[in-house]
Length: 404
Length: 138
Image 1 (cartoon, chains in turn red, orange):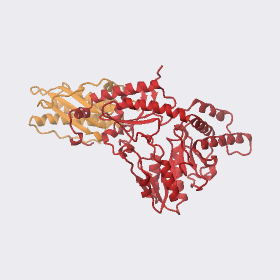
Image 2 (image 1 turned 60 degrees about the vertical axis):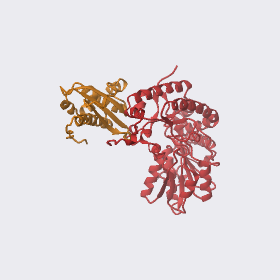
Image 3 (image 1 turned 90 degrees about the vertical axis):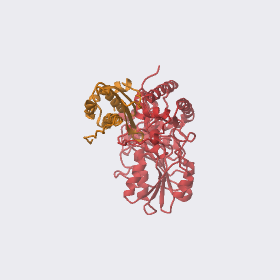
Image 4 (image 1 turned 45 degrees about the horizontal axis):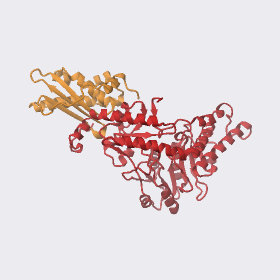
């Protein structure tokens, strides 16, 4: 029996896995000690639970448990990584390299640092959303201290050539940070093989709770340090003060363990469903896949339905939760800057939907989505003046539009 | 953000979708908005030369639910009105009728622009001066 509404917005956040929830519950009512309390069993029990979670998390990403710094989420991790490196390595240089398609937590942090004297290079990406190692290499200068490139893009799902970029940075002696929020728990991520020095990720994108994330900070070859961005009790090896969110961390650990054990099977299942959804929707006339088709997360698909506006389309598929690159879904009235970075026509950027499948997505839900989206696209095209012009062979670029 | 019942009703059952023959001099067409802004409205009126009454109105809109509802409502209101009456339709009446939130007021502005633009197209076709808008929004 199909239960509505259907959740296909797993790049935004995910349902907590019941096994994760179960692991967390004792840490609210019974083992509620402060992990920093060294003088009694309440504290010891919490510290033990945190240490265990640290191991579970480190194991998923191929790091050491001492390299995991707990934060409130990926936004904080990104802030800590970039601001922390900028401050800590100020004597080495002030140049940071990043991409125009990064998450706002990266871009706005960089913009903030520019006001404080940082020099930031925002590299553009190709039409498929990918950057090349050569472009990064060409941007590296003597004063470059950090390259920050996201692992998998949140809107498109495209995977950057992280391993190659990591190797390049290592050879140049430049620190490499990756915002791996969308990738960790979905595909194999290995900080050793990928030569990653700092990496941000969060629990709630992989069936863990909201409000807990981590920054991986390499301890050997090279030993990396970041300047704390909050003053306090000196937790997390002095890099992030604040009482640890023990139930959240326990849940994060459990989520990582489940991901590590089930990822291989789960990613195949999700990719099969994703491909089926995508193939069916791309059968619609004038529908286009955004981003590289091959180098991509297995559960994400971003499709533009030309001549149909994204928010109008979402209203027509109200039983399906997705997100759109359309202006109307954001407060800014600007269409997605990620899609615009690909060089997409505005009407394509306004016409996009992002489908994010997840652990609890079923085949039945995919069938329903295909049918529902197809019907809504056809209905809206029947009432779209742009579709009518397209069908009459009128070039939309030849029209003088009245901007408002 | 939840839509009002009236927006949902117009979106689900839009009134007067369609195309009038723009080669006729009784038909005025207004095409406003821009694809890059995410809203394009085309509103058409058919005017009876004898009576000066708008006898038919059609629309097609590329945009969000509120844009579709605003133009659907506009066509409903236009039918049976004289040109002078039609020019009196104010975007805030659309806002009120559809209970549009502040972030969607631009949809009603666009509908008002479309009405004016369609009327001026009709006037131009019949050798009349365009009517300048007296009000500025914002």
